[in-house]
Image 1: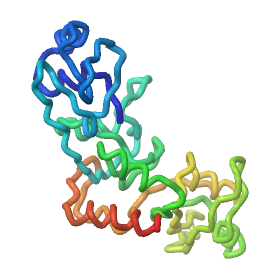
Image 2: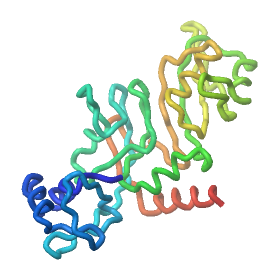
Image 3: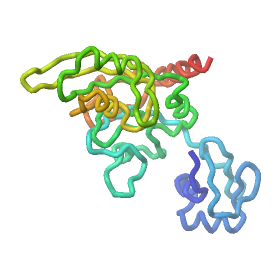
Image 4: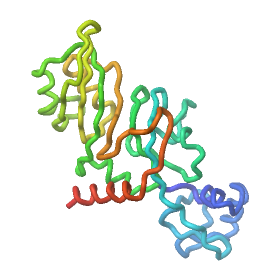
Length: 244
């Protein structure tokens, strides 16, 4: 997660962004032992060694957040349309955080945010098969034959999906809707919505309720909590085991 050097210097409290640029141009900043004078230089505050006038900047600590994302929030660090983003909901945390994967604008539920690029990559890489559990309210009541298509893998415009675990939780025949639990490990754009559209039962509401062993228990919409050290280590261990 690289950022412009002057931004990292400014965030460390050494100087304003403008003064940080002057420090760089003046040859007073080193990155990994080498003087850097280009303002476009990008570094990773967690990995690179940054010195200003010979003084080492403290490396940014890793932060791990579990957020209950509401609907109507964008799962990016910034939005060109000016909409509220998930990082707005954790604005009191000084470290720059990034979402681990995405939940689309109209989907709510569990979302991790962190500045740990290695863990983000591990959790989102399809080969690690980190399972995500969703509850979907769909229009109509799908037959088991339709759900079997999701269980086997269904063809979408970007390829066949991996087999999903699917079960009907509840039906409302008066409203002609069904509540369905679906578990997947992929993270394609709008994947679950497209899967249900493909069987003729479009999603009305969608919520992610679990990622690996993490749940929303104890959280209200729009609120977050920090992961315990044990949870972070368990996530790392989980992905390490999958690599093996």
